[in-house]
Image (cartoon, rainbow, N blue to C red; front, side, top):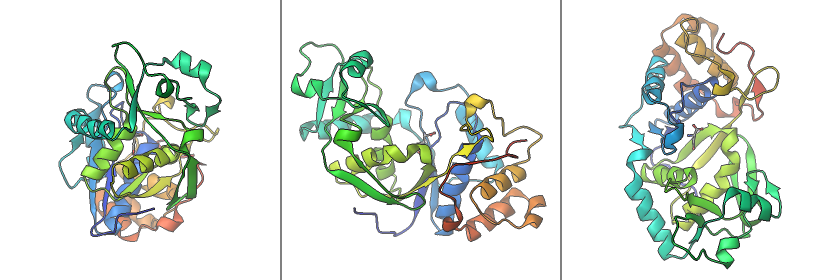
Length: 307
Ligand code: GLU
């Protein structure tokens, strides 16, 4: 696997504007910020707003305010995926020219009925439209042809991870029939175009990474380093998310407390006397002293977050 040689580290935080930041996303923001700052690099923020029906009005502003309140400042202009359609189209055209894509009009129901088995990522598409292209002019999705080659990579936290895409995931969608560009496409193109060479994000995206690496390779782009951080569980074992109405940013929780909880969740040994300092001091300490190897690989529970 080729990884980008570090001239300078470039990391990013890529929230979807579906609501306010929850504890898991605060942890991802803190980890991606500290890891890249420790290397003296730049931290970018990208708003993943392609799935318009899921976008909540005002959420982007809320998220940016929350990042600022934590003392996490980005180094370049914010990237909005909704403004990058032309670039995604250009990449799809290139892949189409290279015959790596094919149109697909199968419905979810048809895929479910025809899939040989259900993988970690849902039903494995059996290639129906590859063998028998759609014959009409109704809008189609575009799928990327996968191969039986095993895609493997060494995650900085989770260790070696591998997937044989053709059998474990199947040919996957890069553009939906309604014209929406898929997350896998947009994330790869944006990471490449911004020069991102360090991707730090939640472990729930670990199984997307082989698809992204495959696409990086198909496009001849260099592959970033990946670090997938553990997910925050509530103490009854569920993943903490917006669905649990976990409100971190309430007047009762100071940004200092939240930074402390996030850093503690990431296994960092934060001196207690920093608790009463300004966020800028805590963030500066964390950027200088962050130790990647202290981050536990396993998801774990936070009993005190956000209360
Ligand atoms: N937008 C995704 C999320 O909010 C993160 C995607 C990524 O970091 O690649 O979970």
